[in-house]
Image (tube, rainbow, N blue to C red; front, top):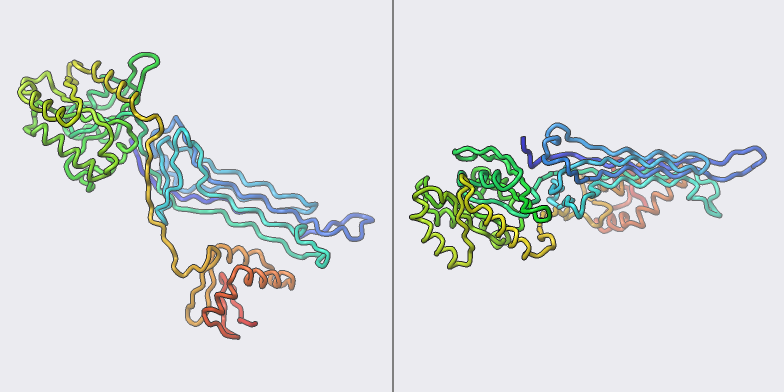
Length: 425
């Protein structure tokens, strides 16, 4: 079963909490604070795996969590870092943040490991807060929460050459004859419902990877049939081999078939439509082929295409095809094709900074955001020193200034991540 799309939820580990501790030892009257820092939370990492060729596992296992960092301890001991969560995916997998459409990872041989969710930083222990005027700090910081995302995974085949064309024109037969691939071959439409890869070897040092892309139909670029799923795989190929049934055994005009497929490429991607293309005229073993081939060849070669006649059934012309493909590939730029993935980033117009958002709900000033949640969670409101630190942080990041800009008055209620206060200046 071939699966090329999946959705998963990933959560990196939270940072461990800092410790509040004081050195206690016989004959040491005032050892000072020695609370250690929390450990870092584990990351979630996508890792390319040569042994994987499908996303089927993600249909059944959808949640992936890295380990939390350990809490700090006395004696200035730092908590243990949380273990990373490594997710093995096939090469050619791309990952998108479903909330924003942002491309998060593109797993290739050159980029086989990508951190997609970062673990939270460990909280500082009270040993970090001792000063000449504050020698016995009674507080520490909580660890930062790890990142979490709902992610869409898509698999795009990595191949040098992509076989394209209408269904039932002989693409699978060509691949089975010239490579080590063994796709299902039968004389009916949509025999191939999933892409197949094969290594085409001319000799020990000369080889390339060919992909049999399932047959396209008119309207594929608009999603007709399985069009979008199939066109997605062509994007990764450097050279297109366009197979056409020139015998017209299904009573279609071969030139019109050629034009139809190329229109779908243009409609799907202008860049894809400009990809180098070799035309393969198949079915030369059938009598009707000889009637149609001269006009077909003359018309397309006048447009700059190289046309190679073959018979996938008998194997005639396949050696010439392999040699010409290999020579053409050697003339293409060696650098990896540029792939553009553009997501629409959702921007909250109420956000006054990266740290917090302020909204007025039923006359209550509601302050929210990841940094605010972290500040509230790390504050012991029963300790006077921590209350002072809390107040100074609100002033430093601009919360107080924003509240005053929005017209807050003495005695108004402020809700910061579920904790309510009466506003006073």
